[in-house]
Image 1 (cartoon, rainbow, N blue to C red):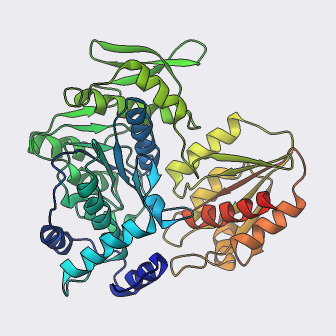
Image 2 (cartoon, rainbow, N blue to C red):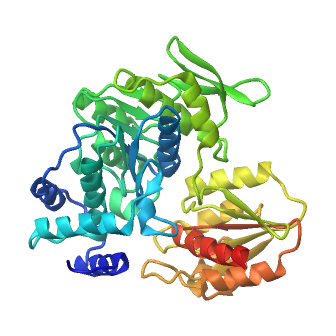
Length: 427
């Protein structure tokens, strides 16, 4: 065995293929073919792509399926605190030992074929799910769709959550191009669901060319809030499920995600019959860290959100606007350099009184000075901190009871903030 610690395997994978994002399926598909038995045929496979809302959608599927008594295997990325969060059985992360077993098998099968860190993880997940045979396998696409490693698997149903601008340098700079990339997870003759608000025309064209029935939110199905807003109805054509509880994930947009999940499950109901009670229970018990996650410490509300593009940050700003606090709202922001920093900050300008700008220690991260320069363009001044932990320490020292601290801008930012808050709350 090459290493006996998961951390060592991961550092080695990061150094193995210098192209950290190497889009193209030939290598991964070949290694998957060599891994025996590469077989997910006893599980129903759902692939999930989209700019925002993928993690929430997987969590909703997991919660509803668990409530209905079905087993799930889920693969998501990135992780917040531990790598193992990426590969879950029945919502529980798999152990280091199991993940390393998969890495050993993949390392032997690949021979001299190079694999990226993400491809190793994807192959490990599907290898472990093939062994465990859960009822449903949920695969979250890392980037795009068509050329993402997840796309080596033929899903029984594909779901796209939303399409907005994010990784333009990889996926193209307009929504039609991005839509075509994400629709690359569709399969000939198999159903596809689009749960977002605005669907690019290219998604429809791609589905039509494949003969894949495509179900679009607002056209083929929808979730409608009832009077008073405490419950909602799901409807598709003449089918209706009335009086559903709101999803336990914060943000009005979770209704779209939930409506898409119910549409997908209704398309699979021959193989996965569900009682309406399971839907209600799943919606009420769903949880997901780092998505408008709220922690209270010493009378200060900490709100952690991994949003890092204008589409997601607009949702965060809406949430803050709808839920005012008595004190000041302070922000800890750290971002990667390929993001639309000026627009992201501009969307939050009216919500935040006090900005703390943190450097991110990663080749793709902005340091505090660079972040400060880009925010100055948006007319925002903030205090500069070497890293997120430094920013958190200063804010924790100065925030008063009734204040809110919003931590956002990237997964890295939320990861460091969560680690800091965990250490604070354990003292």
